[in-house]
Image (cartoon, rainbow, N blue to C red; front, top):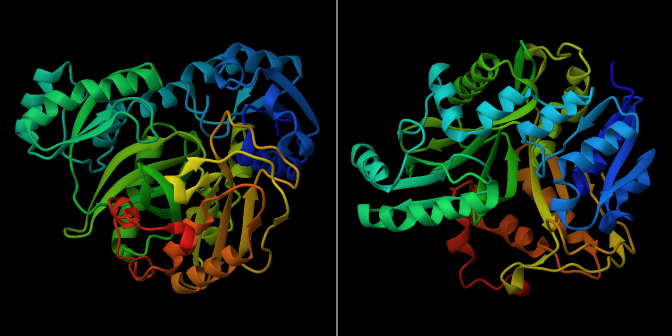
Length: 454
């Protein structure tokens, strides 16, 4: 193992997760934190902690010079970026390597290729992976978009070439819509990612959002099966599960095979996720993008496979070959993860930072909570509202949802409002329990519903 001291360049629950996995591997941990995060749980758990700047993320967690300088000065061998912030920033990965450290993730070239959705689409086509019908790479302007849409057929989705998180996306039903919405999508993408580039894809109606977890060592890759993340609000995932109950065995096998083929074609190193849309009416699936990092929802995959994805990505970053053989990775049961955010679901999901009061986390067989909170913790108002993730495992999907409902009843986070009532309602909903939903299901479901009363 070439990594003896690891710098964690992130915050919140993923920082806690990385600290714990690294310590289990016998690696010393150095936790980065902003001035606002001096009391966060990961700081308390790490062997050392280093302040990298003020509360504003652009001056701390997004400041490449500050992060790399702090890691170098702390004598670290490697940097783990977590997710979000600089995790998919090729310039950051290059700066880490230029400073003589290991970036725990794919190479800068891979990040750059797969982080540009239009380039990733081209890589998928070259690897023989099916993609949603769309434009041939980036489009120059609105006129080019109108011409491309005529060939693709409406409705079309305008998609930012860079970034993620649902930003820079619009749906156009006509040429007039396209002329009006392209500038909006470009402006949003430019503000969020510093890149206003865009491309078009045909809208897949009633789509299921399926993603395949892969791990590679730069030459060989394996898959850890798939997750479904179709329950989304404003294109942000709120409920994830593994495996995807909507897939038959033959489709699952072909989907996972395609993900491994694409990962190996780009020499992927580390943990990554290939995202697809699945069209139930036709049984077709289409690659849409790759996330070149660990994802928020990775624990559901760990629960059904027994694979520690964080530990594996640290090992391969340290120069070890994959410890996993495809034939040894097997699905067992079903897992569901829900995101517990500091938001008020009765008030349009308004962020609700505050001080955590009495805290009770459910424990027992098939239960896991990946969190960042403790009693008396003051939640900073500057960052994402995610407090933790409640993950359950059962012998089948129905049993897992039953276990989730029971765990949510036992979860107590006093002092702040959380999204737990949303998940209580979803776990009780007949359509959700039947698996009868798609990516456009949740927002109409929420309309006119009082979650405070449930």
